[in-house]
Image (cartoon, rainbow, N blue to C red; front, side, top):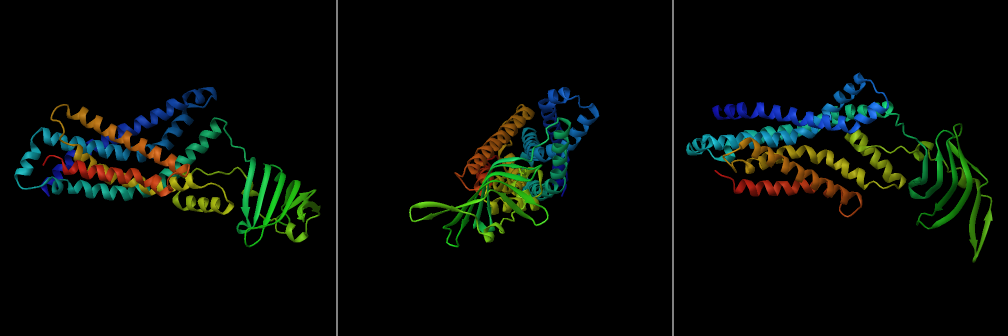
Length: 358
């Protein structure tokens, strides 16, 4: 118990200091990236400060793994440099046993980080993005072009050149009806379609149904039975894409299911959804990594620990960026896109721990 208290007495202030430092750096980077936009749009300083406050939970979320990595690496390296760990090992306490409290703490922190992101980071970051769009006059248009929507469990396909949200109107609309075996049943084209709030169906303008009779293409006025099935809500056609990072896991799952239902690509969103679960586990992994990296030098402990921590963090984020891109374009599964860096660093941490000084 004495060793545990001493270990956390050395670790805690360094962790808090590192967390504050890395969070401040991220806040300043975001401020500098948008500073010219704030000046150009005459945004009051008080509003800019409020935006930065809303961004702090997000920066803390990003900084926790890096802060833990640096704090553990520096604490253990300093203990090595001062020969304090030599005395610990001489007393019969192994490195794994000595660092077990840190591993337990990191495991608890991993679970806490997930709920911290889901309950606090998501709403504050979404509020920050929404307010920033208003202040910078970056309001998003809900109009949508080249719209393709699967409806009625895939038996009806909408394809429109343009959806105009203010009029709730589709232009250059083509409807493809399919049989239960997914073969084509009918094709209907209309110059436009307007949404009827009263009956909750689409009203077509100049609809024409195309069909083949032998090898000859013929046209007729569509059957009323087909027109009565046009009840896909107008909101479905909006340019209402959702950033998975700005919603909690429950809403993210609902949105991904919505994309699957209407036949839109969802691999990128699904990989970001899995990332929400994968990222917090990094806190536990970096403790293994820190233990393996510690004690590599008895000189310049602060600089060496900082350099190793930043290098490991950059390697992880670059690897995750690459795997997420591969998942987005379908080269690997969304699950692997989010979790592969975690698996890689688990193996690397075990190897480093195996060859660490004891």
